[in-house]
Each structure stands twice: as C-alpha cells, then as structure tokens.
Length: 204
Figure 1: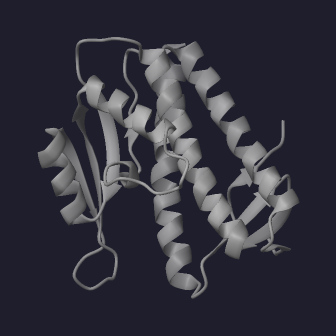
Figure 2 (figure 1 turned 180 degrees about the vertical axis):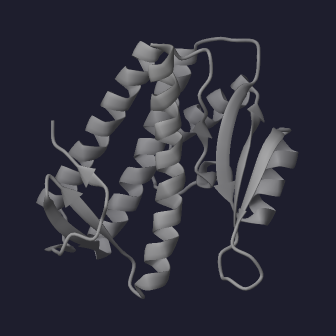
C-alpha cells in the first residue's frame, strides 16, 4: 500500500508539470489559442469560448484538488511540501512574500528561448495553503492572484494515506472529465479534430 501511495501522488504532480510543458509547446506551435482533447477516443479542438471554458475548468480542477488534499491532511503543525511554477520574477516574489523554504529549483528555457518558466519545490506553512484555498473557493471570476496563478500543488507527504490518495485521484479525474463533457456539449468553438493529444480522458 505504501508503494501505491508513492506512485499516485507523484503521478498527479507529474501530470501538472507535463501539462505546463504541453501548454507552452502548443502555444508556440499554434498562433491561435486552442487545445486538442481526446475524450473516449473522440477528438475535439477547443477554440474561442470553448478554449476559455477549458482554461477555467483547469483552474477549477486545481483549486478542487488543493481543497481535497487539505481536507485529507487535516490539522498538522509541520510544513507541507509543495510545488509551483511561474516566471522567475514571480516565483521569487512568492518565495520572499510567503517565506517558502525552497528545496529544488528547475529552470525551463534560457536566454535563447522565449520561455521564462521556473518550477519550484519547497515547504509551505499549512495556514498559508488554507488561506489560498479559501480565497480560491470564493473566486468564481476566473481571475487569479499571483500565487494562485503559479500552478500551486501539494507534493506527496505522510499526512495523506494511500486510500485517500486513490479517492482524491478518482474524484478529481471524474470532476475534470465531466467538465470536458459539458464543454463539448454546450460550448461554441468545439470542432471535431484529428487526435494529437497523447492524454486520453475516459468517461467512467
């Protein structure tokens, strides 16, 4: 069971990081903002309003994931391992403002590219994460504050057991797939497309 937990939560974090990388790859390849979705083997291109709805769904997924993880952690006195990303100036501002103890810094891109992205792993105070979650839950506009816009995520930790990890993953996957189905069924800007995405979302 312990091995299972060690695979599930890292998988969630890897998914977040891969999503960041795929977003930048797609953004640079297509002049128009869009995303390719593979839903049960049926592929769609999300443009215009559909793309906007998808980006909002991504934000909703992240804030739901943070809430589920904090509910599972409960009240602990120690710091919580986290990861977040953003421009170099933004992440430095977050680190200084919220006194995050950085354990690892990964820089994407260099002076020869247009990518200014830094991925941080570190330790954050639980009360900070709870404040972010509360503010995020009350934000329905789609706008984000500086730290909410940094793809904040909780890393594997001893306060979430294996059964809780499995349940969180199932719930967040169902939440996201249901959101994608709503976009496909109700939004303008959805068109059939060839399958370019390697991520397949499956309806359960």
